[in-house]
Amino acid sequence: MHAVLRQRAGFYRALHNVTAMPASNALPSTLFQTDQLAEDARFEAWRSSISVVFDVAPLAVQPMGSFDATVKATHLGSLLVGDLHFAEQQFLRAQPRVARDGLDHYLVQWYRTGGFVGQCDGSTDVEVSGGDIVILDLGRTLRTFARRSHVMTLIVPRELIHEAMGVRDSDLHGTVLRAHSALGGLLSDHLLSLQHRLPGIALDDSPAVARASVQMLAACLLPSARTLQEARHSIEGVTLERIQRHINRHLGSDLSADALSREFGISRSALYRLFEPLGGVAHHVQLRRLLQAHHALANPANRKLRVADVASRAGFSSNAHFSRAFRTAFGMAPSDLRAPASRGPSDTASGLEAHWQGNSAEYAAWVRGLANVTDTL
Image (cartoon, rainbow, N blue to C red; front, side, top):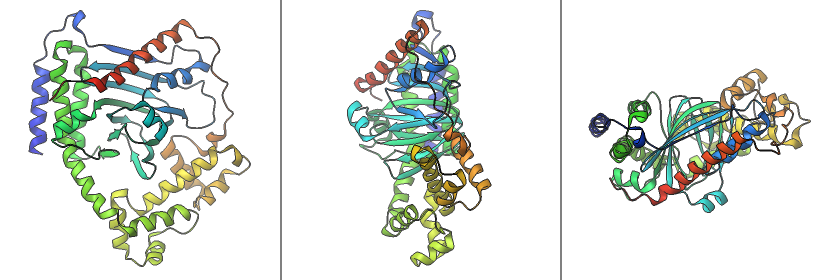
């Protein structure tokens, strides 16, 4: 914690020392908005804008005319800072995409509101709520189901974080700093301060501010990364893997703590310790059931199934509880997955659409250009 507080002081010194900024010395920035586009073109414009980092899809088969998203991106030398508002949707980085684009960066996301549920590397469950900060490795796979959210982001080259942490490599993918934790609170305070001060930071001062930001990030992450590694040593045992496989194969069965304890011959307290890093037994089981129900409802082959039948097959005994849990996790009612499909994108691109496409291309070039950063800490 002392190291974090020292970095906090250094961060504020860096911001305090910024110079008065003439207009010609402003940080490069770009703005993307959907609200001035034709309704049938909004989601496709957003898909194109975010495609440098993610493949996206609607969270449900539904009309996308009301879709909205805004991104303001600022180039801070060795970092990219983003302020995003977006409607509910799926974000995906599958292995072919990861191999193709070769992004070697970490994505830091502070969910000021909203959140998501999903998986890292196809097996590790992650849940993020409003106020939490999550670290994602863009060199690895990811799939999330995001609610309507307001997110501040940093895109940071891998080598800069590792150098600041004093390590050659580190497994940060899916690391979450919770809103109520001391380190999560400290880092969110600094991200908010950085965001507020960005308009007044001159281009010449950006290396010092970026360096202070990365050092602050590393100071908050290092204890969490170490804790995560220690936790993994205890949860990657054969017993936990067997229980998780059993859960995934029997979601419609009794998966209470008592039932699992009897099935695997371990005490309830031992079972709770195994699942504590995953948010607890009941939480893990419910998340797996919700993801199965979402997949089933979104599958056109299941359109004749009633929502109640899907809920029952996924292991929910109460339709009311299922609906509440589903809405909390995905920001929508289960029946919304079966809304009519939207029309395709507009065939004609307006001048505004061309403008946003230009901004998207610029942002994409910035992201790819971070791979060539030569600044060191």
